[in-house]
Length: 205
Ligand code: GAR
Image (cartoon, rainbow, N blue to C red; front, top):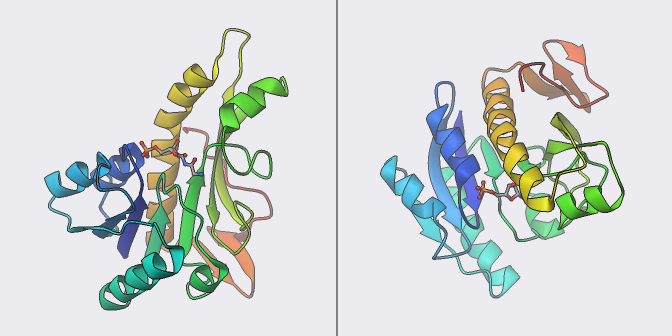
């Protein structure tokens, strides 16, 4: 399975994906920021990169579309990509774009998820991998990981603790899509031939 990854910054989820490539290959990385550290990570793994400044969304998406038409990937992974894709764009790739979001969706779509979980005095926090549709962070959830929130936690400690789990969650989810263990059929999501109605939670993540 050929995967294109979109990033905006640090690229630690991209690195996790690159390190776990067995059943899929990251064939290209697109960044909306020239300074994104993840670009160097891609280059270190020998993966071609393109920077598309996202000043004008329509122009940027047209450029991305051209690139994607040439590459024809099986899956597009948003890994810390901090731009909202238009309805026009995402509807061209139904169930072909996934995103990792640092909250237990449907809780806390959008930004500042860690602080919002703390403000609400949640006992649990986590991350979700979901399909991308035209509604921000509202596409069908695929998988989740959880962490407990303690009284000592800050937004920073939550982000740090969650990140290492995010890496496993994203790379495992992409691997299971690549191996056909996660698939969609007749509008339903399956994992190992069972319809899943709740996000998959793996005991080791
Ligand atoms: C990750 O925590 C990811 O969940 C989050 O940005 C971070 C990127 O880190 N994504 C979003 O907030 C998307 N709305 P990384 O660049 O090191 O992978």
